[in-house]
Amino acid sequence: MDEPVILRVENIVKTIGPHRILDDVSFSVKKGGLKVLIGPSGAGKSTLLSCINFLSPPDSGTISLDGQAVNGKSRRELLALRQQVGMIFQDFNLFDHLSALDNVRVALLKVKRMDRRAATARAMEELARVGLADKPSLYPAQLSGGQKQRVSVARALAMDPKVLLLDEPTSALDPELIGEVLTVIRDLADEGMTMVMATHQISFSASLADEFLFMEQGRIVERGSPALLLARDSGSRTQSFCAKLSELAGDASCELPS
Image (cartoon, rainbow, N blue to C red):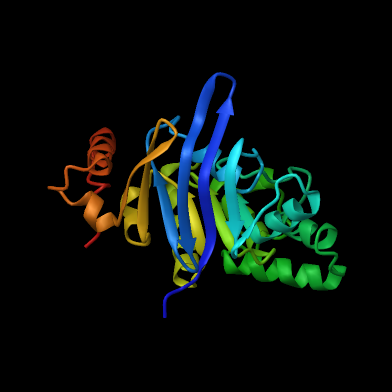
């Protein structure tokens, strides 16, 4: 049975000053799907994710969730959208004065209005889900970068999102910490979480994504399956970009996984 479209992005335009950051961007994601945004810095990937969640409202175009277009001028609809579309940022966006438990629990208490006991139980469940059941009392300053990012994932998951947006979730991490966050993302994909992720972890995402969207100068200039776009003889912009990443990294990180 074909899965329904959960998220639809249509003709999104975003201008900042004299610069058109997004230029008529459209794509859709089916339930359980993973779309991966690839492209050089400044291509518009982060801005696109922010537009989807209306953290940076688009100038024009439509964002639809479960077939319903979101009215970006309605506070009620925006609050509902942000409960259903979770966001994972490059720099974690944790509250430094709150413990890991409270970072996850705070939205359950203030937004979902859960009682404290239920919110605590749910927060602990999500911390365990990302491998941090033994760290609830630690503050961000006491956590590694990988642990902070896993707390941010737990915080998003606690809201039961229909879609998870991930903006370069490993870019702020030391190389030895990247793996622990990628493991969590792989587990979420295996569980059927619907995701849109901007990343340079090409080989990793190729093993999970149903489609790559290559962005350049605010447009999606190429789209297709990882197998199609990363094939050595594809001549694709994606393959060329990945080859340059591999050359800079001094490895074969963009080769298709076996």
